[in-house]
Image (tube, rainbow, N blue to C red; front, side, top):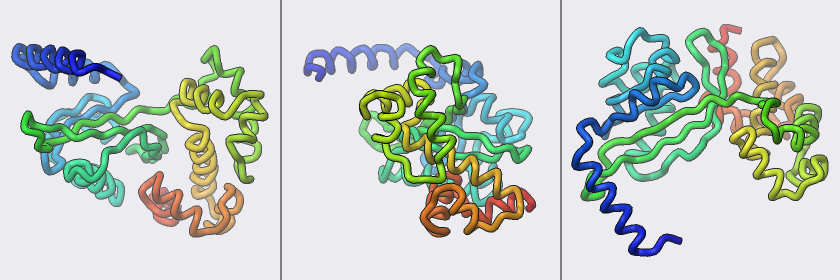
Length: 253
């Protein structure tokens, strides 16, 4: 825990720096260099003020000017755009912050992509919320080049083989010959996901592939490890932002 002196010193350093930086949005240039990270700053009503090149490409647009001054509801197809705006308005109202939320996105070419999203409120010197900043980081899954991957490989294999069955942290830990705390740390280090998020992702990956075919939603729910149709629909909507049937319709099936 930081002492009062350390906190005061940190605040003094911030104040000194804020007084000499000419462009408070200097990070935009840095984030332009990251092709796997979306970065944005929005104003008090959720309109884009700063974006990076990755976000422009993900939206299928040509330049940043096409995004500035618009809300997600005006940029993304529905119901995705309205969902992102609703997230923003919750953050701007001080009701919540988005902290590494697992999300499945549909890119302009209809390819699905997984990411972790984080959004935080921006406050004035008086403490008033005046905007928000956020990032959405692509998940490069199955990072088998990571030196630690072999330690959790057995647990990952178990998830892929038995995602249609109930799986507990204890099951995964026993398979990897680790404690529960150890396997949670390794999953976060390698995949940037908790084991539970990894299971959800694996199940919904399978579900999204099946939704591109003619299998009924009820049968897909059962095949992907959900107790019933409604449990599957709740999880799918919470992660993707639409129901399985809406997702299927967006794919043109």
